[in-house]
Length: 68
Image 1 (cartoon, rainbow, N blue to C red):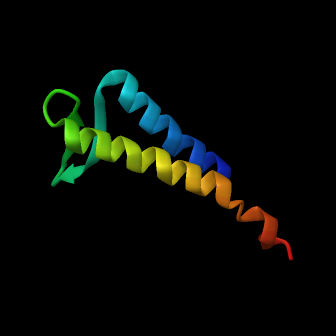
Image 2: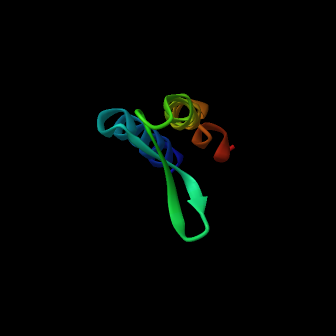
């Protein structure tokens, strides 16, 4: 289950790099997005956070100690 979550986070980061727009929370009921052209620093920061969080979740392998 955690591996799927990690892969989804990595996919969100990769999709953000491909499209040039990444979701970064919300402002009330409206989604807050950063684009490569509008705010490149925050765009690449959120892409890096998605990818690194996904890699961390996949590599942590919580299922290896869950059964013992």
